[in-house]
Amino acid sequence: MLSLVVGTGRCGSTLVQELLSRHPAVGFVSGLDDKLPRLNLSGRFNGPLYRRSAPRPPGMTSLRHSRRILERGRLRVAPSEAYQLLDRYVFAGFSQPCRDLVADDLTPHIARRLRGFFDARIGRQGCRLLVHHVTGWPRTGFLHAAYPDLRVVNVIRDGRAVANSWLQMGWWDGWRGPDQWLYGPLPPDLREEWEEAGRSFPVLAALGWKMLMTAFADARAAHPADRWLDVRYEDVIAAPREQVGRMLDFLGLDWSPAYEKGFSRYEFPAAREAAYRDELTAAQLAAMDRVLEKPLVEWGYPVD
Image 1 (tube, rainbow, N blue to C red):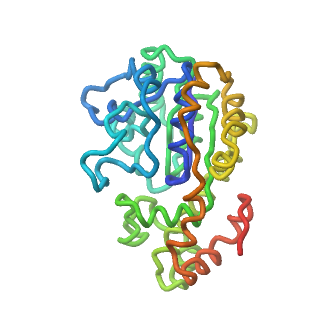
Image 2 (image 1 turned 90 degrees about the vertical axis):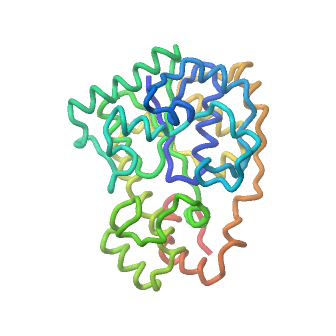
């Protein structure tokens, strides 16, 4: 069975994916598999190798954008979004579509390739559940069309924190403007808000989050309600056992002694939760609040 952990990127979905992948019944596509796409590795030993390794150090970004060549925890088998593999063996548009991928985008040819990709890894890894990580556009409608039993864990984080984090990432290409960034053009109403904000880059990052969260709301509405779970990153940090227990129950997994052994290695510091308040100016925060007020309230976040 295939399940997903999804989120906007820089929302805490990597932490959730790694926590779930500590379970002995869970398989995943690893970063090593993705770095060697021509070999098309199926990850037979991903789970056992990963569950012996230490948790990912906080703040680690991709090797391409890391400022250090040598980092603690860099050399390990760990879950990946596997965009190179999916682009190569499913279809080339999976990693950076200009809009969300929905059920109508799935052709019979791509469906066969998609099922072949994940089913081969489920079989090779001998896992009851393969949990895959997807960030950016949800793509849940597209994947649900191929896997009708698909379960989705949607990780949500305060849009101001997400936008602030995007601005600090080497992969964020919003500096080129919304006509050339990875998310495709802004809808006219969001474009107008950006222009009114003086083409502010913090506001553009906030509008990117707003646009993606609209797509997540649409994706959730189109998905069977009992197979979609919203989880707030802030709640995971505040009450990790409770929230991880919810996710395991949702996925039909037990909290076994083996899982406890892996989970107990994690720490959940809250220091970065509101870092955006110190790393952005008061004017930038006020501009973000103006464009994000409605979606922040809808997703359960207070606005000053």
